Structures are given as structure tokens and as C-alpha cells.
Length: 77
Image (tube, rainbow, N blue to C red; front, side):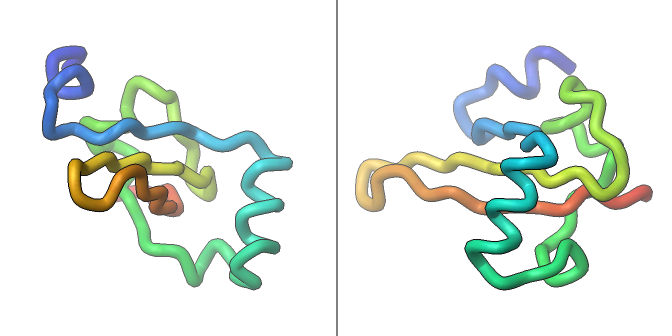
């Protein structure tokens, strides 16, 4: 499993704390139900010990677009 998160094609996943989560949802004027989902047992986040309703920030980097951040809400699956 540790191998997966170190792979070049696996983007950085960060579990946000409650304040960060609140700030992101406020910034986008959204509820957690409006955010795209990621399963709690997804190999890319299992090392973060996620709980349902956590918010995960995904940081993607590319040569053409620089750094882009995406968010996913954790669901049971």
C-alpha cells in the first residue's frame, strides 16, 4: 500500500481538519453533499485514517497547468 502513495501518478492527498473543511465549504458556498466523493477504503487515502464526512484535498501538478487543488468528501463504500 505504501508503494501506491509514492507512485509518480498518485497525486498528493491531504485530510483537512475541521476548520480547513469549514473554510473550503464556505469559500465555495457548498455543503459536503455537493462535493465529489471518494471511498473511505480508497488506496490513495487509507493511510490518512479517514472517517466518513472528512474532506480530502488532492493536489495535482503538471508541466502545463502548474498546481491544481481538488476536493473530495469521504463516503463509506
